[in-house]
Amino acid sequence: MKQYIPDISPFETLWIAKLLGALAGSAISLAYVLPAGKREAAIRFLTGLTAGLVFGFPTGLWIADSFSFGGRLNDFEIALMGAAFSSLAIWTALGFALRFVDRRSSQLQSIQEDKGRDI
Image (cartoon, rainbow, N blue to C red; front, side, top):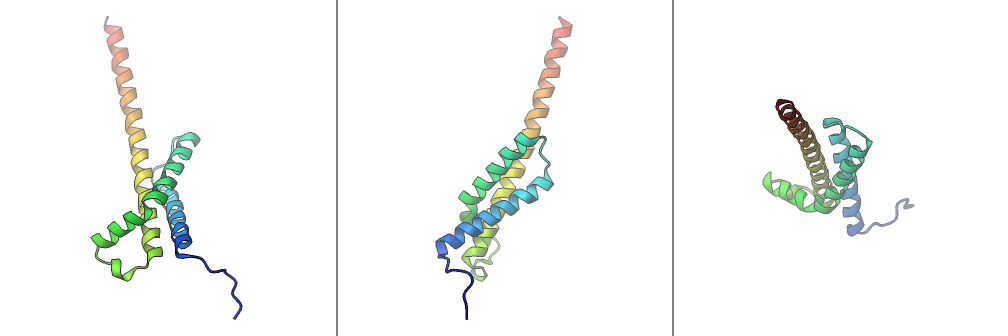
């Protein structure tokens, strides 16, 4: 039988899983919380990708242990799940945080303008 895909080490397999999971999580959260502009989208994408790559496997282990199905998943599935969740969570949290800061700064600006008119 001819082999079309070369052997991939377990280490490389985990990196591929984390990369795919991080990309999937970033794509899902793009639709969930739309970015206000290109700069925000780029920052959130890179943050999601980084979080998925760094925290993918530990987060996957935590999820698998929390729901008691860790023994039924292989390392690839655990890393993929954890990276997607990490990426989705950080990107969504960052999106909500940026919106909150924007609203709060506009509220503070309007309060300062009202105080300026009272003087």
